[in-house]
Length: 464
Image (cartoon, rainbow, N blue to C red; front, side):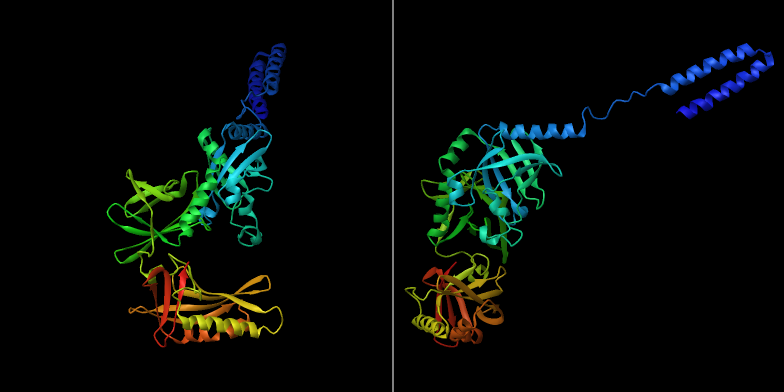
């Protein structure tokens, strides 16, 4: 700007110089030159007055937003209920009930387990600047059980846990809800402001009661669950309290349809990550009836109680690996084939005798595990040695034909001890060389029966 002014002034001076020369007036020339130089100095020294883009510094703006978010968290008088979905919900869903104070302390309940639903955990938190303003649970808590990389702590993957986060960016926040996303694993977390009634309910043990009642309802009876919709459509369901995944199975137009959703427990029952749509019916919650001790849902204003059944609607071949994940061939079942019971006892004695160094190996369980597509099976041989429990597995490819006949082709082994495999050889030989029928027990749909077509041999097991 200054150089441009000097250039402009020099032009004017030259012009006046020419004019004055024509008049031969030195005094006039000097007077005009002074005027121009004073004006040039005025413009060169005058400061530019530009309004700043922001009214405060970057550090001050960050401090202000952090204080705003902390005020929102603390301002919920009765706390927040949180839904928490590690790895986008593939690792299940969880609920947390949180109450923040302005001293950096947070009280926490959770549906992780009975103990976390019954008793609060006092821990600490921060709202701080990281990649973005973040809520950080900075000391160990119920939430950290999902983050812990040691599988012995809560069963997560080694080094990864459940792909969960303890530090979450705040994406938006109002007095009624806060949306967060994990800084590392993108865990989705939504805080919703709680009412007085909800806080009192959690404190009085309602979350614990829901978990305890649900476990007894889902697993205690040993029965299968289903939803029967208003037009009579029956859908088999599985509510897995370990994985926190809900699954629904039904046949439509001769095809098996599978619907899954992560879920979390609330003080009213079960809440799904997203609305579940089955055969044109949509719902996002199942409610616990504490009087009748059962779950129900509502569709189009109609209450539908879940049903407990002694046998699923799905054919057995479609249930393998979907509706159930395994079979426990208990030799003590009242209707067990005596041939199998004798074989089990003989195998148990052989394994004990083959244990050449103490303590001896004691067979405790024979079972099948199934892959999720129903084509892979593991023969699991569980045994104890002193107080330690071990399990060796032989993997098989499952093949079935249109007649419902099954064969098993060995694929490999995992962790099986040589003495255990040798002792179990009589059963292994039958599985690898015979053809079988495999179906629900005609007299008890909660049992499966594997029956050889080549010899007088069958084995019954409890469906799991």
